[in-house]
Image (cartoon, rainbow over the protein chains, first blue to last red):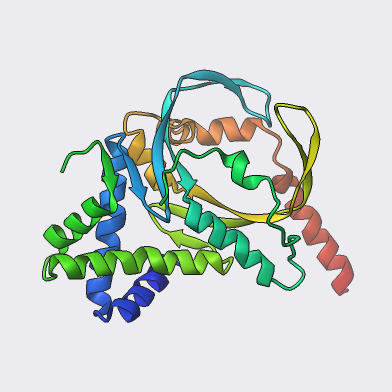
Length: 120
Length: 139
C-alpha cells in the first residue's frame, strides 16, 4: 500500500473527501517527522513507538573497495512494533496458504521481547 | 502539550489545529482511521510505503533454534511474521541536517567522474561485446 492508497482508504473509512484525507495523512506524518527531528519519541498505542537513536562517529569500510571511511555521528529513527500489532501481523501468517508457522501458544516469543509496555 | 513524547493525542491536536474543519472528536476518529487502516493492511502481510517517511515491511521468518540465555538450553523458535520499519532517505536526512553524505560530497565536488573512471567499469567493456554478440546471432 502506498501513501495515496492509504489516503483513499482513510477517506472511505472516515467518510471524508480524498482532499481532506490527504491533508490529515500528511499532517500525521509531518507531525511525526517533526517530533523525531526534535529527538522526541512517538508512541501510538496498539501500533508501536518510534525513538531516535544516536550513533557516534566510527571508522567504517567500503565493502567494495576496502577503503576506510569516516562515518560521522548520526541519528536514526527506530520503530518498535506494539504488542497488538505484533500479534496481528504474526497471526495473519496462520491464514496464509503454505506460509505456515506452526500455530502454537507455547512459543517463547512473549517472554523474549521483554518489552516494557510501550503498547496497550 | 510538551510531554517529551508525542502520543496519539498530540497527533489528534495537530490534525485539529493544522488541518481544521473537524471537531476534536472527528479529528480523533480520523487519526484512528489512519492507524487502524495501516494495522489491517500489515496484518494481511502487505507492506506500506509512506513516501518521505519510510516503509513498514512484513518479514517472514523461518523456524530456527534459539537458546534460553539463562540456562543455555536450545529452544525452538517457531516460524513467524514480524514487522520492520525502514526509514526513508528523506527522513534520515531530516534527522541529520548538518551531515554531508559521502555520495553528495563526491558529486558536489564534481570529482565523481574522475574517481569513477579510475575504477574498472564492467559495463564500459561489456557494451561492445553485447553488440558483437547480437550481430552474430542476427546474421
